[in-house]
Image (cartoon, rainbow, N blue to C red; front, side):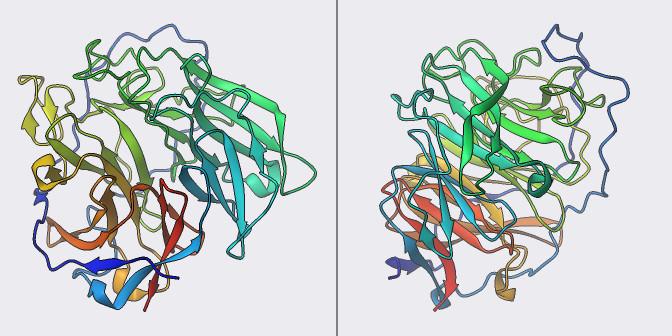
Length: 403
């Protein structure tokens, strides 16, 4: 079975913005937080910024490809991650992780923590998953969820002696953060090329960031955090984090999804907008952190509150709600077996089902609509081979394939 797909003809292209530099934010007094920054934390291995992902410089004909349904019937799937074994792990928002093996769903959940996940709000629940880079050796993985009281929680779990079952009693909480409203929880987790764990957190919710979390580098909401989960228990703050705490980048409203390019290490971030603009932000591999993405002074490349400090970084692509969108779902750079897609970053809108491709060609970012899908796309996924998947709020998992 394949998804009903309309290949786009290039109209309705989001604004493409010339690349700009990555600023370094101002220093602040170190905050008093539970984990301790340790002076001998190893510095990450830095790679040279690439600016342009290696791969194609033109878009393929989307009419030659389709999104094939491989699984249906899940309960609000919101994330898909590989563990390196060939299996795929799919998060169900109420609090379960399911295993997909050879395109078949394993009956028993890998992890069921519905007893501690609060999923009453539309944006609450079990939201993110990341396997430790040495998962095959240590059996550790990390999740991001809202608990029964609404706190944003990042926790570590351990697989049991059965590789298809995790131990729900092995939980070690890294962070439990008060969140004043049920929306804007972020939820994404990903290990970077430096081996650190990155986490996306929303600004705390309501509208307009009423508590100013996005621009407050002492607050953890409205940020991308960067944690060393190997040098201390439950974690350490890397010595080169820009503000002396967990914060690595700030000025974000709701970074629902972000991803690192498997080949280059570049970072792509989808930040959900307020009333008018959805944005894709970009940081090249080796960026030092401290970037201010502008919220709530800016929404996309436009004034929201207006003003703000110098050096705020505008997105590399954006689209407006006037085009029918409502909420950006960030994807991945394709690195699979279909050479036509190599190096193309895909992203979509949750409400409209429109999906775009993004490339950097000769120093200019170009974004083009490629698929118009009858799907509410909650998330993308990427397997170990670099192939891409999308998840539907109605329960489906689809894979990009050649017709």
